[in-house]
Length: 241
Image 1 (spheres, rainbow, N blue to C red):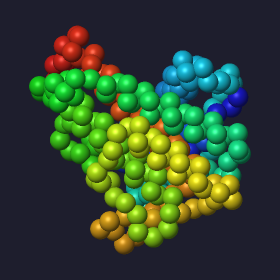
Image 2: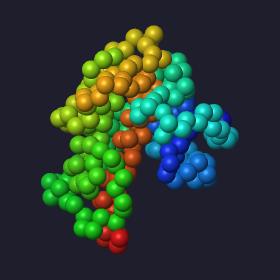
Image 3: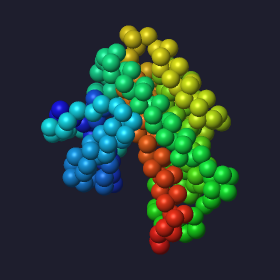
């Protein structure tokens, strides 16, 4: 299979998103760094799916089909590829992958309170999340991931929508709500561009089902990896800054 990617480029980093495999993404400081690591990201994503007994096609190459200057676009833009219709098979496959990513996150954070609330001393990694400039505990990572899950799924509406810091429930409850919200959408709206307006904003965002799928799966997987990294530090020691 030739894996198609859409690329968003910022002044100091770039992200490539697989069009046909929501959740498969690759980042780097610039386009060249992204391109150098795309094949490894495809292999990692495929290994994750195979671990969960999901099928993944053999790698035959990749191509960037769309490039967006994200600094010049609106804050929450949608790629042209996000507007492509989904097949019923792709939709069901993506819902399974959402459930897998959610359960992985839940299991990674299934820890005693003294671990959930542990903040490693002298955090060795720069924290670049604009929504949370201060280092997070594992509990904080989990809450953040769930807040973004609510934020993503509430993008599938027009007009006033929920913001990023709303109170969240358990991972199981949010997973059920997300899957129910996606299943409630009629098939004719799978390629619709929705325009939610977030709290304190007047400019509407651009959201589609494909955008929600890719952002949600990749975000849960990224923060699952972050939690597992913290757990590794408990065994090997916190790296020196």
